[in-house]
Image (cartoon, rainbow, N blue to C red; front, side, top):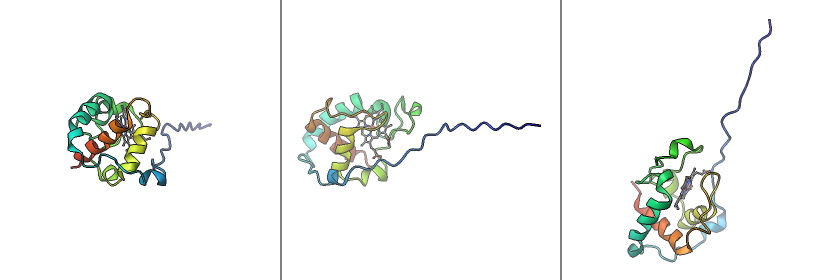
Amino acid sequence: MLILFSVHAYAQVITPWVAPPEANALINPIAGDKDKLANAHILYNNYCAQCHGYKGKGDGPVAAMLNPHPADHTSPSVQSQTDGALFWKIKTGRGQMQPYADKLTEQQRWSLVNYIRTLKN
Ligand code: HEC
C-alpha cells in the first residue's frame, strides 16, 4: 500500500518589518502640530482606512484578504516605533502596502504619522 503525502506550503514566511536604523534619526518637522490633524484624518480615510480600518485597528473592508494583515495602528508594536520609522514605512511600503513616496507629499506623510499617534488606545 502506497501512502502519498502532499505537503503544500500555503503560508508565506513573513519576516518582521523593521525600518532601517537611519529612519529613526529622521526628525518629524511637524511634531505636535494639531492644525494638520483634520487634513490627515481625511487623508487617512481616503488612502489607508480600506486596509487599516477607520479607527486604525487593522480591520478595514479589505483587510481579511491580505496576508499579512494590515497593521493595527493602535497597537504597542506600532506606537512604540519612532516617528521616523513610521514615516519611512509609509514612504517605502512592503508587499501589499504600496509605497506612498509618489502619492503623498512629505508633509502629508508626516501628518499621517501624527494622526497615527492619535489612534493610540
Ligand atoms: C492595500 C492595503 C493597505 C493600504 C491602502 C495601506 N496599508 Fe499600511 N499596511 C498594509 C499591510 C498589509 C501592512 C503590513 C505589511 C507587512 O508587514 O509586510 C501595512 C503596514 C503599515 C505600517 C507598518 C506597521 C508596522 O507594524 O510596522 C504602517 C506605518 C502603515 N501600514 C501605514 C499606512 C498608511 C499611513 C496608509 C495610508 C497612506 C496605509 N498604510 C495604507 C496594507 C495597507
